[in-house]
Image (tube, rainbow, N blue to C red; front, side, top):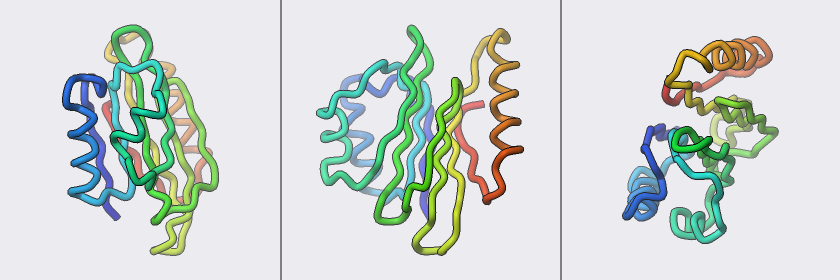
Length: 142
């Protein structure tokens, strides 16, 4: 299983969409978690550029002002998506791994830089960990 997690500091910057597309192609990633996207909306043209063959299901949290934003992609050739949950600081996708034949939980997080959001972040993280019984892969920017 191959995963990519990356704090990109702005996925809409010039050349970034081509870079993401090339990264997914080169490593044949089964899932990807991008943090600090600094993007509020994703038009279909964005996903056509980074995922022209539509191999991934995409989930995201929009940025708040000039920071934040999370983007997660799950490759459907490898995983069946069972459910997904989005919080203030995380995207959690429960999947069935077709190759390993077991359920997994993939979590992409982007923690707050300022102290004011840390309590909510830690509460969400604790809740995810306590509610989930499947093996979990947790990555992102803490």
